[in-house]
Image 1: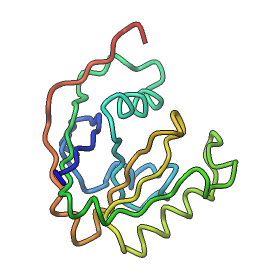
Image 2: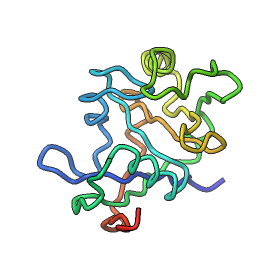
Image 3: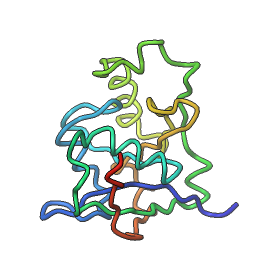
Image 4: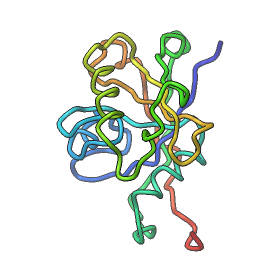
Length: 158
């Protein structure tokens, strides 16, 4: 099996490079699958899903110029060790907006247990597709690499 490519649309700032996989951004804000103060990296299985997931958080600010398409390379051996949460396992309220405590608790528990470096979770935007959480505290996570592919500019028609 070949290595697996995941995708992110990431900002390049003074605080964090677009290739940063420390989970610092999610640590600052928290998210659907992690509490504020808990680092995790969010990625998607396709470029299109990564774009949609990021767009959902931009609001009217789609004209940003510091966003980049980032390829996250996961060794096949790590991908095989991923954990998964499926829609069937979740309470119907999992996709509430704003999100509730149940998904945060699941993500935090997975991060704390540190049994797998990756966790696939369904996308709220397209539940049939998945996003991937990367646990930066897992020892194997250092084998995951990130590379900027190009600047990512949202089409103004969006």
